Image (cartoon, rainbow, N blue to C red):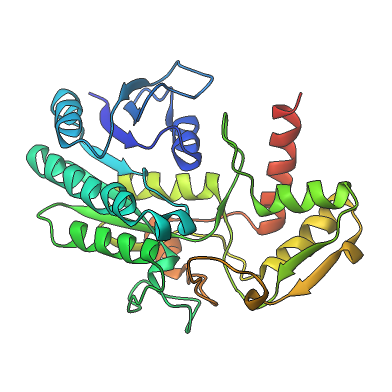
Amino acid sequence: MPKSLLLTGSNGLLGQKLVALLRGRDDLRLVATARGANRLPFTDGYEYREMDITDPNAVARVMDEIRPQAVIHAAAMTNVDQCEFEKELCWKMNVLATEYIVTACERHGSFLCHVSTDFIFDGTAGPYAEDATPSPLSFYGWSKYAAEEVVRRSALRWGIARTVLVYGIAYDMSRSNLILWVKKSLEEGKTIKVVTDQFRSPTLAEDLAMGCWLIADQEAGGVFNISGKDFLTPYEMALKTADFFGLDKTLITQADSSTFTQPAKRPPRTGFVLDKASRVLGYAPHSFEEGIALLAKQSAVVSR
């Protein structure tokens, strides 16, 4: 009997990468779920169910039908500034929805891989190990920390995948990422300001998908840092992007975060220590340069 795995948020960037990674396996029954219609261009090798995670009845109905052995909960409201303005919706999508997923998992004995974020930290002591003490600065960060606590306090077998600044290319999605923004701006001869006082471990979406699958497949318990292995400022990321595409780096100017007005506070220095994920899971992410190369290849295919 193939293992049954249910995925939430399959229309999002991470969800799409998980479906691409796992579809068509003989040893897995993959059921992708999201609100509304399936946005993926391929439909073979997996099943799709509409499921609004903010509707407890919808969650119960789909979970009762599938009775999955494992769940990867990738759906969330991740726009940090939008969460600051729409706190009720943010709490509903990130915390209450997690409660509904946890309740259904408890009923069926499902293992839960829950996806979380570096924004649960205040950024004063990065890069962080898994046992660091959370101290969020934004409402988004607080909502994701609260969701972690819902999972931790449950009776489930669970694993939490924390990640940082996820980038990648997805189907039918309007949101860009730093690499594509830098490339487009420099190709158009525009001068861009990029911050030098924030540090991150940028994460290729394919790597995050693999990390979540390693947790779910092994049913590995506890918290795991699943991010890129480089520790970079956005300014350094921009320079590396310009180098890769052979673009004019003189158009990239340094700035500090105080020159940008953003509704939500950002932690200045996050990034993750990956020793545990490497040792326990066998997690081995791409370098940032390798990630740029993969995006370049994918964007060429998408734009044809």
